[in-house]
Image (cartoon, rainbow, N blue to C red; front, side, top):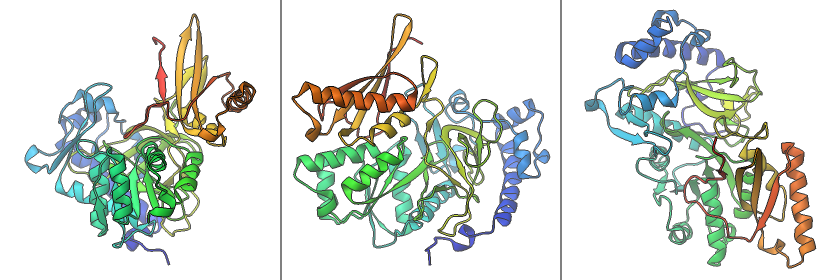
Length: 434
């Protein structure tokens, strides 16, 4: 019998969930119209009043919210409560403009923690587990989000944050850590560091599970992580604007459960804004149903995914989305062809001679775009024979061209020569002035 954090809610019949969402949506639009000058103005501009929203289908009448809205109203112009009712602030790095500031009431913090407590329970975690949180703490939501969710569950937290990797590995081994939460790229770096210091994560630790997110990753990379570390790798998902990490895959690993009593999910065509059929890829749009400080109406997350409609073996009735396959704003257009870093990773991780690190460099030579992929090889695959290296380059180039429909220059580099990341990895350098 699967374990649930809140069985009544998690296994609620779909029709009852829909009614619950409708009631919460109606309450939400009244709430933001009364408390947020931003949303009142936006609704008025679109000719929609709270009383126009009676069913879930009516959500299409509501305008979208985008990240730029948070920047334009910086720092707290979209908040629905005064600072005196806030418990905490978080903020994005602001690397592409003004940072986005998110505020939380105590109820928001409690809802956030409960969302992750449900998620951790869904993979079999409990009070006997020790979770090493190797996401960054501070303004970034990853560390404190996983931390509070784990404590809500009643498990033990090891708040290592990122960095000081050898010390992290020592603590992982000495304290019998059973689970870890970090970016997939940082965990790859941990595996690599462990090898360098003569440690075998698979054989010398009690690690059983990893919760990886904050950057797109592929099924192929997941398999490589599981094989090398001897763990089960789970998707963890959320965004700083929604709260932070909120959802994971369950033990069935057939998609990420989105708690329907807290969030309303739409998957929309990136061009038309219309709903795509279940199973087709589109842009994730989220409406927060319970947030007090910073509710979001039809927030365009920019992440690309699919909605999964078949029942989940775990018995939970809440909607599921597939692993995030990229971002609509991460797409690279090279000579008129759309390329996503995830496509390249998916190809490379199937080639045994290729290591886990690569870099995409896009440039413009004269009138033409060019794309080069720098690829680290496994140490065992490196050869002094030019013929071996040329054969491997042809193999990789052919595999990439068959998927991308684009000729790509491949540069094989020695293991350890590409930069490592302790946070979100950067896989694309675009040198074009466009």
